[in-house]
Image (tube, rainbow, N blue to C red; front, top):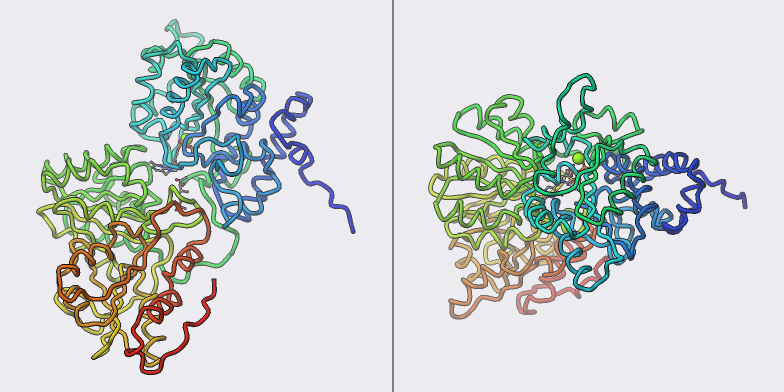
Length: 607
Ligand SMILES: Cc1ncc(C[n+]2csc(CCOP(=O)(O)OP(=O)(O)O)c2C)c(N)n1
Ligand SMILES: CC(=O)[C@@H](O)[C@H](O)COP(=O)(O)O
Ligand SMILES: [Mg+2]
């Protein structure tokens, strides 16, 4: 057997952070370069966050040389920049499984390592964790344990970060090391006054000018400030971090880094410095992505009405707003990584007579639920929420699956929720949302490519019938993109002598009353939705059906009320019976034999 020559021998020599201290200082630069090459090679193959991680290689080395994880708590905000941390904490061998089912998470993961503390990939939380940890260490007299929060300049534009800073600065005697990873970008360059302030701090003062050094916002609040420090100079970083640790107080260490550092394709990517790259498959999606269809239709709508304005929370391009922004730059507002503010600012825009569209990933709207409820719906304001990445997203794991919105939003009085099954319905339903003037509307669709258009064969009081089998015993009610699986299942069952009707309500909140009548005319009704079962479309239909006598037979196919690990979107949907085979299986298991003209044994399901 030929012995494998280690491509990254220094990387492979690190099995725990303590190994870093055994490395001669003059080899740390070499280690950084090997980590960089290791990440480029592996992440380019598996997919994942490349730009953010290349920007914190030296910072991660310095952090683990100065602090003693896990005794010291190192919390990464958002966590998408924790790959070097994972390499330095003994997980380099698992990188070929990155973001794959059962493999390494793309974010910190407590089951993976004692060095990982926060798994939530929602930004702007690290300082709140740090505030709590510092208080706990103080109360437990664990004064030898230090708290470090690594926060990006983008994450720092989130409201929670300032709620935490308000508390940390008020007790600045309590040691918290706030490592500001300032690369000047979120996806795109970070927006807002804070970004401008940081840019001022990054700019070395003119030695000829007589002006005093700029007093930072942090110092004005009562925090100590060290910086700016070159975020790619390990010695300078170590010196700054050791000094901060020795200060035994709340201190901001301002590290200036470059997103994508050392990898020219990332450094030169003006869009987002290769923030995230897909797995190297080479296969281009054959059908247009939902996001592109939304972006094009919004642009068309924006050309027809000049009251249409859009908002994004630091994700203009990922949510498809860039065509609209190019054409109507005055009518797009990037509010920074600040979803709560985005929602209530949209309320203000609506109160001012405009027609706002908030484009946001489903999972991130969770953060603005109160604002939807009390700042928008209470005032019956015409704001439309376009929820991309709704349902199972896959590789980004439990805090990214957009599996809650179809349970949360129907709680909001007066809000109407639409779920397009295909790109054509997305275009139609967006227009319908924009025509609603007496309250909020929301539109949800999944990550990735929208399937082919699925025409209705009939209509019933606002409900599209995609298959209409006279005298059918089985009714499938599909929410959004699950319509394709329902139609495939219906065709399979029909071929087995079980005719099936497939209904797509298009609007899943409030549910069209016609659905209850349809269910009452079938021996078995299945609802199928890419959302958590609790409070989902199925349970909401059940609430309508229990008021009937007899109560129609109903089964709800949905996601379980628990956190789902990362993996392939299709595999996760399949595992929870939300694909055609799963639907067929459920029908055959629950349909009374008298309705099976030629009953077949339940086929063994592929996993
Ligand atoms: C609440 C929330 N909104 C949006 C996102 C999507 N998101 C992931 S990383 C990122 C940019 C973060 O910028 P920064 O904190 O500066 O980190 P960097 O990528 O520059 O290292 C955004 C907006 C998120 N993770 N959480
Ligand atoms: C870290 C983060 O929240 C985003 O970058 C997330 O990875 C979005 O992924 P997609 O845009 O690829 O769905
Ligand atoms: Mg940044």
